[in-house]
Length: 365
Image (tube, rainbow, N blue to C red; front, side):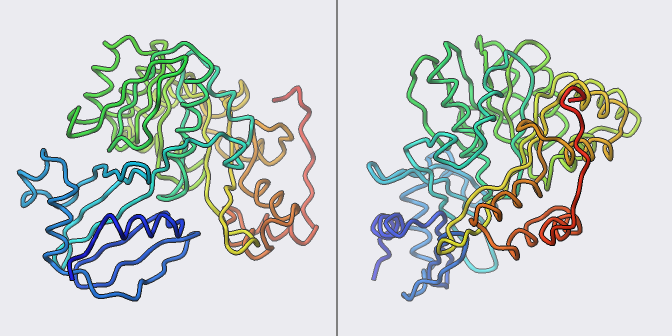
């Protein structure tokens, strides 16, 4: 029997699957609420994989499919959903992963994210990073922030993505969306030409290398508000990752430059709730206040984290604070809070009621 891709994706959509895995020689699998479920069906054949590629791949890729080991692109079933698709060659005959991208862009409240984050959309320049592991909701958070600007400000927003995920409808803003490989060669080139397109706001899908990082910082320094993502594990790790893109001899000067233009880092992860395993975000937020800027310039990252631990303002908070709040609200268990903590000893102390911190005065922040 021929595998009917659209029918399977529609059924997966009704099951609220976030990801669909289609491997040659294996039955399909779905990720629902963070867990993988194997479907009881016939294995996908090599001919099925070829038919799916013929049906879904943009023509720009079909011509050179045999030369490419990994491809990211978009597939859409009108009225159902858009999908970010990854095709990769493997030890069999290839694998496809479909990530669901809803048409509707949720706001911060609907995403259970801190309402404070909307403050990042009010800046006229600088750079904001959304960080986390694959599947932690970074793209969804970015889309929510971009939509806030779209609804409230008269701006020109340029997005450079790999590939374009959420599609925006112009509201108060106008939006230009470009996809790597199809519309633009790479992030660095996309930023270069975006600067000639009269932008106010730029979304750079991901910082992957030194050239992209320096181009994004240049855009932020020259009067543009830039949003981007990093695959890191915490705000301090994000700063160290950015620093690591630069040769050691230039790191000190780079950190001063970065501290002057960065507006904030939001690290997030999706954690299972007590409500039938549904997922909710836990966040760590570091807004670059004058004190934070000084510490980063001086390389005092331990002091930055200490400041975050002692803060009682919504614009600076640790992952442990977020997890502990979720536990206190009855949304997650103690075990989940500890499992997802970035500082487990401190988290254990919080859960035992042993943790005490002497709050800094608001004026310090």
